[in-house]
Image 1 (tube, helix red, strand yellow):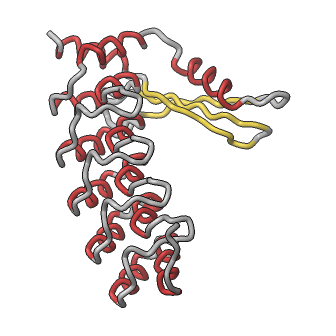
Image 2 (cartoon, rainbow, N blue to C red):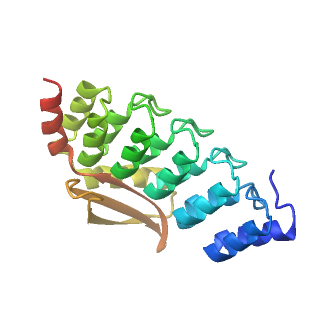
Image 3 (cartoon, rainbow, N blue to C red):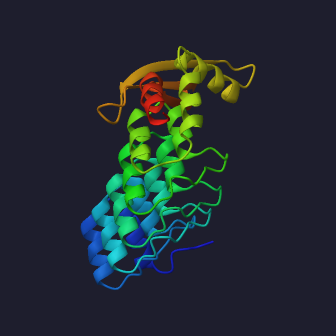
Length: 252
């Protein structure tokens, strides 16, 4: 397990946790190691990339010598952590510093896996611009284009098609399979099955949000509560009809 090596290392971690960019810069200039970690084995760079998503703090750490590809003690990477949340500028900074775009985490997920699962089209685009292979499947064996179609993200599908992503026919089949389905209802059913623990019962709240990108349609979000406490949730885009039309033209 990685542990902070000195009180000054701990100061750096505290500054990163607190989003204090000036303190981070001061400590690095004073010689504090950019590879300092917290007591859970999370590096300063990983925390900066994931917690605040501050690309400038990430760049400070990278410029001081932080390894852009170094995983946490649990095998999580800064690049994948940033991709999960769609922190595109952080992803760009890490890739520019040498992070490998297709490097998998301990569970087999790559940054592209996370970007696609969470419908972050801009993040997927930056990964592709820096050499990510659109033909690398996720740990479940599903190609990025097929996963993007399942997630109902037209914007992500467009980005992948622009980089000649394989799997067009399978993606079209996936998009067609979602036509007319009750996205919210299916999410609720799956989440209740995953989180319900008798005799306690769950309540769910469903809402629709605008897509991340202008042409990405709406996103259905379902949250699960147990005794009024948020227990879990899930979301899915609703752009399947537009995706099917797009792919029908692409496979001809």
